[in-house]
Image (tube, rainbow, N blue to C red; front, side):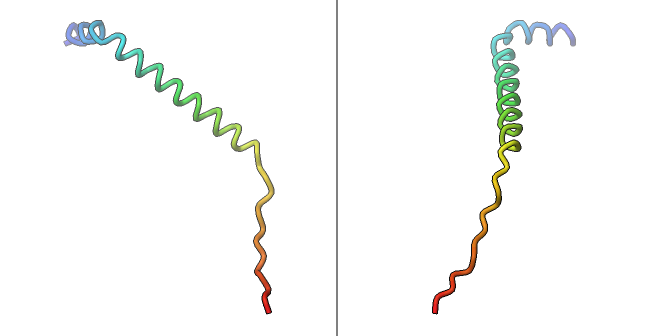
Length: 53
């Protein structure tokens, strides 16, 4: 059983490393964006009622 998995990994090494690299890049980009987004805390926009007469 382990031999089949070894053969599969050897045959698809480029494909596996591509997806691992893509996942690491995705998680890193999400983490940086999340951290930078939390640092930018602008004051909330206050919408007042329009008083037309």
